[in-house]
Length: 307
Image 1: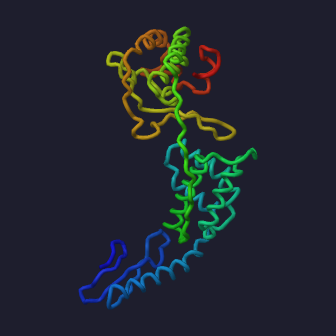
Image 2 (image 1 turned 45 degrees about the vertical axis):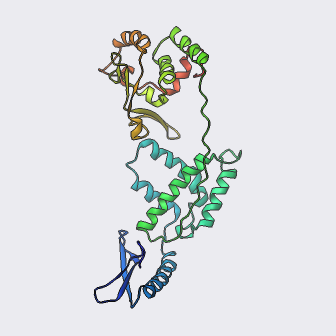
Image 3 (image 1 turned 90 degrees about the horizontal axis):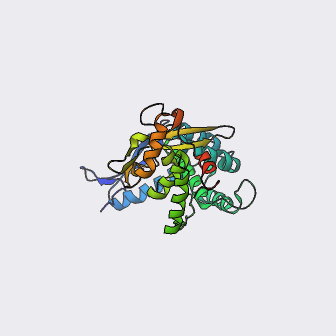
């Protein structure tokens, strides 16, 4: 019996037919061809031979360089979040292009890509002090895998394109003891302002720093004890300039309601003090700008470092 996915079936006239991708159109759509035989086994054998022949013929037909492919890949992914787009741009320009940019895409086989990954892990740091973190190398692998999928889909690349990303060890999370939490809370309440309140929110709710900085008064319901997380703020570094970007949280699961009773003692005094400064209803920021994570440490009540 034919196996699922082999694209072999028996026709009404009694013959067996097998279909394979013989070529691709300029828009990436597949061009199929058929072969026929008197039995399933015969067609399957011929189909394997045809696919191998087609693979050998097409593997050298992609004429793009890696630089050209990555430019096309970036253009196709221009609608992703600004933070992801900038992260990928930096990985491409700093780590992929210097090593692989001038090579032809058709030269990228598993051996070449594995050597590239090993080099990045051993000596990939830009300052020459050893290798990149496995997480960074894994992100590089994600970019390369996605770009090679595009090359297969649209630009006649038929290489294996296999790239083995390194495993990532999950770091053990260290949490504050009850005594440490009490000391931090006491220090914050001695000099309560918008920045120091951010530390208390992180401590009590587990919010990410970007989520705290993007909060608005409309997200906080003191009566119900609910804090709604609907956005986050990032500062993107473009090299010579930076930009503060407000966007949706990291994932769909990050859009959530965090319930915390007993925060009114911190929110109420600050709300009264900030009320006259708000430029539009619902904003927790002055002059319409989000609280900037770069400056929170400078105003920490203990004198400089975030808890």
